[in-house]
Image (cartoon, rainbow over all chains, first blue to last red):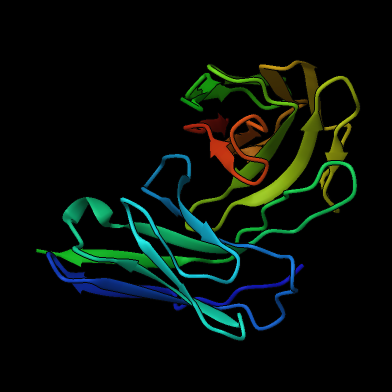
Length: 113
Length: 117
């Protein structure tokens, strides 16, 4: 399974864009990049995912480099409620079950008033 | 849509007893559910993959006789921690796939905090 590397922590001023990087240099051609976040003592929440094109939804944008070895999650206007641990995950596909998610250490984002 | 619930949300038990945690997909059918464990200030660790009507697949290092998983219906999977000990105290989280919506995405439950005294 492709592993991911993220900075352990980041701060962002409220109202500014939060850019969270992720390295996944061993990603294979058919593996997707997923982003989830976990607010303290809750289950993870899906944010966005992509294969090779940039993606945008109501929560965030995902920028994937052309070589797919890294990506950046962008929260365009961070709010205090965006304070959470953000996980970048590369999906592993196995035989009959598939879609196991292996979580890395994530980035703890703190949005500062 | 795509809501996953867990019951109980927290439980305290004595060492040596067994504890059952339920994971339900409320508005979709989940052929596959996943169980994770999370220790304080650590990431989620995948324990097992639960498939409806068949045996669960456990990750390396997870004792299948200690963590019993049953996925008897398309909306319910249970994790039983047998003969629990204090080191089993953790945050247990399940997730489920709704293949009718997305083959790729997993929806997570709110978690169950287990404390073994």
